[in-house]
Image 1 (cartoon, rainbow, N blue to C red):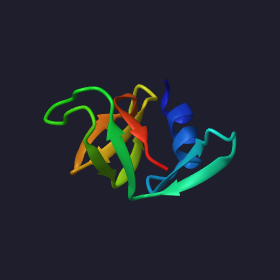
Image 2: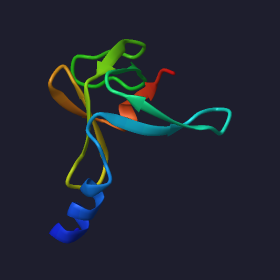
Image 3: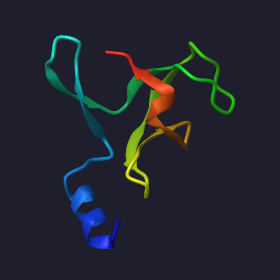
Length: 82
């Protein structure tokens, strides 16, 4: 991805919230901090643990990253708790 495309994506994103679709097909905005549950073992986190996301970022590979305890983790290791 070139710098212009990356800048375009960042223009419309916020590190302080995330848009999610609920089971009822409603679009809601969750503000940070929000709670997630670990669904795959990653680093020092075990499946079933609950963690707090303080920021949401976009990695250079265009994947969503949650900042938990000041460390980045890909979103695919977690389920959002609504």
